[in-house]
Length: 353
Image 1: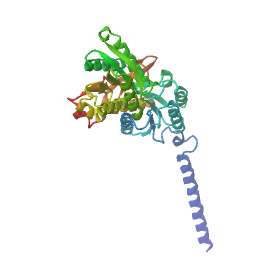
Image 2: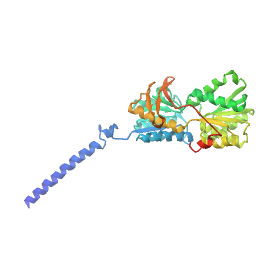
Image 3: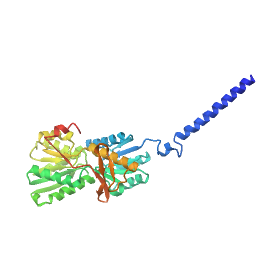
Image 4: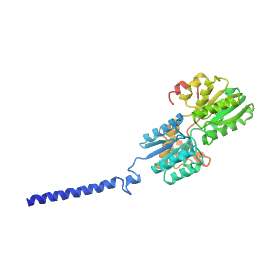
């Protein structure tokens, strides 16, 4: 009996020692201070976040979808965020939340070029790689910007298209997004520069209105333009929300051919207006590709393939090789030229995006 008890006690002690060793190993692998899982160096899946201007924007949804596609293609976790209203304050709250989540990279479509700077600098100081896309933040607030197309070509092309539609003379107006949107403001600058050409001496820009990228407000602003300027011959709306809203107003009021419309629109939303002739043609690029390029650029920044300096190059998946160029005081990658959508090709594109 004593012999049996001795053997039993030895076995119990042996099991206890094994359990203690297993417990220590589990603690080391489960995120204890200084371990790989806790520091995020290798144990955790990398997290790549994007913040768009606001919810309910079809263009923004496509841009975030493109970003998500790139990030998941690379094997990482994509975090998509957008506030209810297109304000800098709402985006700042989200930036702070993402800093707390210790994301590896943050791509943002800025609602204000300067107001986001303290929050984005805080993110960069925390080791997060920050880049902007579509609507840029200032150069101190990011490492790189992803641009849809050459701003000069966008601005000049929109004016050229509108002037052709109205026959070279008459009053025109611009229906923009928010007054702080850097991309919109830059395009408008180039529109105004194009209009300075003597060949446009009979074309008058009467107003720049702002619909804040909200459908109802864009509808109201379009109606106000038509009421305030009864001789208005054309509207340029360099925002997908605005141009679709203007198309609806012109359709509802039976103004096809009386007030011309062009701008930057989603083919799926503008197809009806192009097919009806309310909008003869409009322009855009592929927002999926803008987001996709931003996702690959974010990955390159996190992995150290690029630093955001002029001359850096990266391979952006299906988009191929892209080179970083100067952008004022900062740097950018240019996606490409604006693409024209009209009656000859809208059926092909309206099911794409």
